[in-house]
Length: 227
Ligand code: AP5
Image (tube, rainbow, N blue to C red; front, side):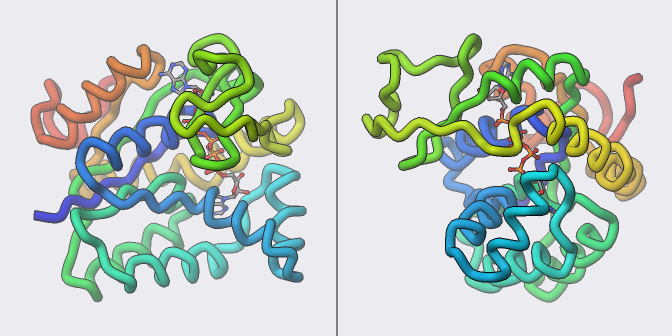
């Protein structure tokens, strides 16, 4: 049976890192609106240029654009299910996703809230780099490549840092998260499918907690807030 999961959390919480594992382990399709928008910006179109300016400032792109991108992917089919990584990020986006799920006769099974404190986020974002070829995510201190300058997964030497991974843009991204995205925690709590996970734990431990939460084995009842 297809499973649809939302990964909800601030910038640097580990959404992309865990989404890639879920793709590998469960055959789910990762829908990262951040990746889709980075693709759009590299297209060189006028829309891509506008998107790039907004992203580099750390602000959210308009609901209309991101909902359009997600709609295309959902309508294209879902296989084993989707991992929504970085979507929805506003209440109108959450409403649009509910409507899209209803149209396709599917549902959101779990919303994993990845909890990480702000100080750790700054460290994570400032040390991050990714493979430009396969998208694998690394970190200077916590997850460096085995061979310096070479991706462990595909062997590419095209390792990149994101233009919005700087202190100013990160402050704006955090503000956007608290103003516009964090209300979704209450939204999904009320719907009963919120599963909080300690995102400060090591990558492996976070993956295990997420697996338990997805499979309904979480220690606390679905949606219960612990602190
Ligand atoms: P997006 O690309 O979605 O960025 P984000 O939400 O800011 O999240 P990040 O990719 O920064 O972090 P992550 O949680 O994936 O962490 P990661 O796994 O990389 O969005 C970018 C921009 O696009 C937005 O600012 C906005 O402009 C636009 N946008 C995107 N979606 C939008 C939407 N729906 N609506 C409007 N605008 C939208 O991990 C971070 C680092 O930490 C890595 O180095 C990793 O190795 C390390 N790490 C991960 N887990 C751990 C761990 N457990 N312990 C130690 N280190 C860890």
